[in-house]
Amino acid sequence: MSDETMTKGAQAPRRPHSRRAITLPTVPGLRPASDDAGMTGLSYLKLLDQLEQAQLELNRLPQLIHVDELCGVGNRRAFSREMERAQALAERHGMPCHLAIIDVDGFKEINDRFGHAAGDFILSSLAALIRSNIRRADALCRLGGDEFAVIFYGIDEGKLCAKIDRLMRSIADAPFEFAGKCIGLTVSIGFSSIEFDAASTFTRADAAMYEVKRLRGGT
Figure 1 (cartoon, rainbow, N blue to C red):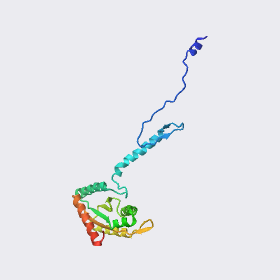
Figure 2: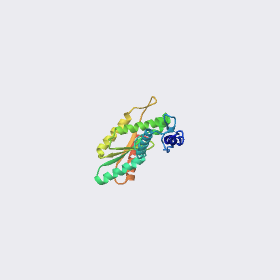
Figure 3: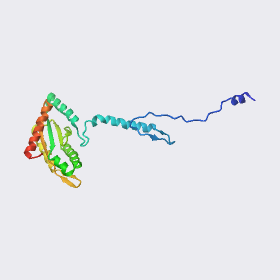
Figure 4: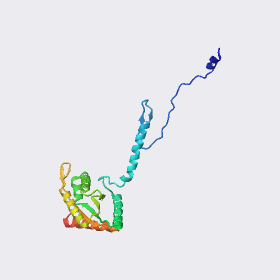
């Protein structure tokens, strides 16, 4: 027997090839996928895609906490931030800024008569209508319930009065139709110039709004 034959004969028998299970780390929010062999796991490309989507959602969070969920406009947090900005612009640069408070007339009666779904529809539709009637630079926020606020930047009082009058007429003329029923809508709007004290500015604008509501017989 040759040396070569003896060497081959001395080799240890080969073990059958076995697949080693790999446990992937659990990533919150990621959906498991199955490969062609039926093994549960996450493919590399799917993992990257889902991580990218998760990161996009995380990046949106700072914006979402300042957005009203129903109407898609600024919420109370956004309002406080915008008021601070308007005050700074008025104080440092002398920019004329105004706060307008908008309140729906008879909103409780709308809810009672047509239901809360109709009330939600009215609020979201009203927000869209107000947004279309103001400049992109102006800030629209929902303060809560049926009350909205608009911060107008760089506009004098005379032009603002004309703008508010047009807005009120646009809302009164708009066809708010829900479930085949047309719901008439009016609003009361009061405003005040924004100075250095946010609390007093809001109080003056709110008082002006209620005075308009009283004179017009709204509720």
